[in-house]
Length: 147
Image 1 (cartoon, helix red, strand yellow):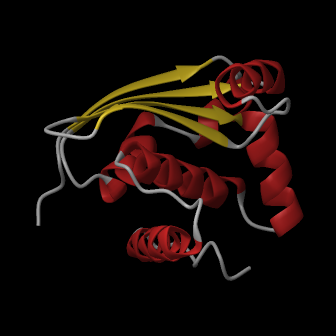
Image 2 (cartoon, helix red, strand yellow):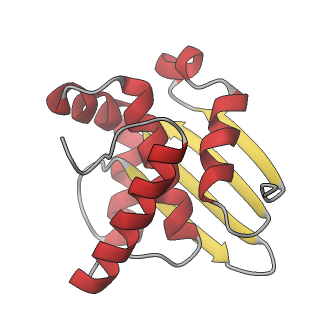
């Protein structure tokens, strides 16, 4: 089965993990989660920018791992994924997983949000987590929820 087309903008406001996130890997992770063609911008930010965006758009005064701004679900998925490098690094260390594994999970997670998946209620969370696990395994990673 062919993967959906992807137009990707990759930005590093925080360059600390640039070497671990080459464009071809980021594309591979996002494409694995896309169900339709996508126009997606990924921005890797520091904690200050991540906190400011989370506060402004979600009313939560802390930096979070990934923020998804979804603009369209079809016929083309349009979204911005904002990933906070410091939070991803800290979470990966706490879970004892390689940094790239956690970035892959955050890119898959954000891409699913961009397509309307959610985890606010139990049934939706189970569906989204099962899909994330399936995608992560297809990419050669472990189940991100069995750590």
